[in-house]
Amino acid sequence: MENVEIPEYFICPISLQIMKDPVTIVTGITYDRDSIERWLSKNPNSNTICPVTKLHLSRDSNLTPNHTLRRLIQSWCVSNGFNVVDRVLSTPKPPLSKFYLLNLVLDLSVPRTENIKTLEKLEMLAKENNERNKTYMAEVGVHEALVNFLIQCYMKCDTNGLEKALSTLSLIWDYFSSCHENNKVENRKEILIDSITWALGLDRDIENNATIKNHAMSLLRSIIGKANSSTLDRLKPQLFEKIIRVLRESGGNTTTIAQKGVDNALHVILNTSHLCKNRNIMIQSRAIFELIELELNFSSNKKTKELIFEILLNLCSCADGRAQLLSHAAGIAMITKRILKVSPIVDEKAIMILCLITKYSATSGVLQEMLKVKTVSKICTVMQANCASHVKDKAREILRNHFDVWKNSPCVEVATLTRYA
Image (cartoon, helix red, strand yellow):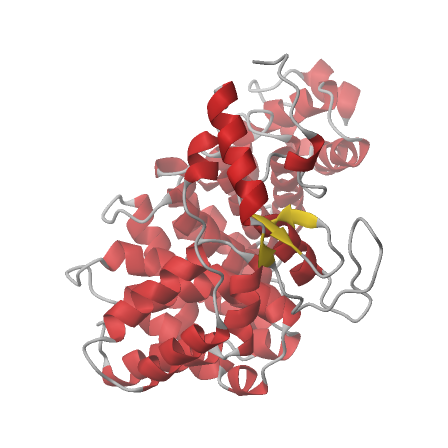
């Protein structure tokens, strides 16, 4: 099969793969529909050109199905036994029309039992990950309609259709916010976040509770990732309380929230914890305690551990954060155990956390605990390991600052301590 030569005109000039749904544009060149739609969507300005002829194209250029070529490809695939034949032989779906989407938006604006079917159709279109679908959805106001629907769910405390609305918004939000401006949605962002906060706080006996929270957390991550400093500064304590509650439930295995949901929650915390106001709220909500528990009981994923350590470093930049970490019986031990066991990112963040603790919170009890849980020995090991120079500099700083306290301890070799301090 490898020796079969594929006719050149069966190959899409963009994807360089056998075309499944060949369409011809105004320049006379034929492309695979998905490829040319993606090209047009990624180049929405007036300078869009045909990839082959370099002639000007508009984003709304007509795509004419090339049925003759498609039949030739079908016949050739059957004759040569290519495994792409099923995809080529399947009848291509007609291109999405704005009129169809506009009717869905209008249906969604009127409260009725059929709203669930409308939401299912919108979710299915969003899951196709088709660039033209997303462009049309933005142009006819699908995002605004879904935001309004979600807010209405919140205002009425009605979960009917909530899962599908959150799912669809989370699938299309990034595309919408990067390519289109919508002041109506921007002006309602605060109540939109309130709506997501409500969804995250739903009781566990609500149907599809975990799925709703997964979608809500995914949408929240997308919103926070694009939010300006003003929006981040206006976030309410209830939001962080609900996020930390979700993490607490995950660590205790009392829900089925997915790993992705946990990571999305951690990204939200990380992207908001650089503001002092938000840090204080998180600490008051026992975020550090819950992050340690999550790391000990739930986290087996390297990326998750890295996120946890990045957040812990942010929160330990203030005295209350360090105090909360030290109040956890396994706080210093957990930090110590992960050094040189996970990744260079965790090594760096762990050493920086220990540096903050030993610089600003180094009571006699803390320093003795660091001997007891072998933190000092681990720091000496860092000096011998293949770690970044700035990490070793921080490790040396810790050893040097407390050499007089640790040098007489039987828990660490004086010669090793002296060599690196």
